Length: 180
Image 1 (cartoon, rainbow, N blue to C red):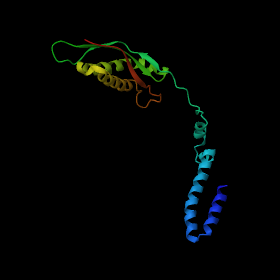
Image 2: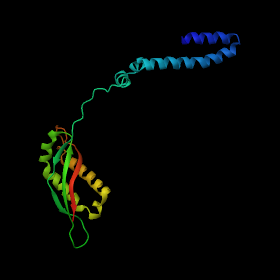
Image 3: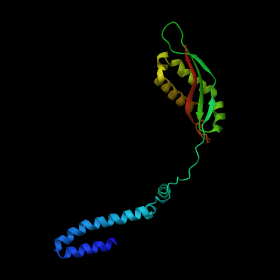
Image 4: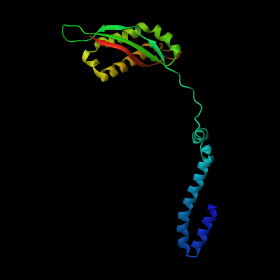
């Protein structure tokens, strides 16, 4: 159908001379190729040829590709931590922290329990270096959360050369944080 229209346009242009025919071919040919390409794309032939058939075909029909169902988070209860902060002045300032660790797999709870002495040491050491001003506001709490997540992942990492997968702590949830 498109080729018939192109042929009619070429025949009409032949009556006008050779220069008009070249211009018409330069205009009609790209339009014809674009039409053929669009037809192949929307029919699903071109994506299959390009190796995108399975993913794009499912997306084009409103179907989602089969993926593994997300696992619900697993929470690990941490013991309460009470320690002094790095306060200037004569009066000591204490922090009480009650928290939970969010981990990716329930099987990692045993590895976290094994690493608990190291985990508590890293948490307390970091808290003792903090000043009370650093814990004020949501920004201070967020910075503390990020530091504790990093320290928790260091504490629960398996020894070098181990073949077991490393447990991963994805979040630290503060249940209670009192600064006094």
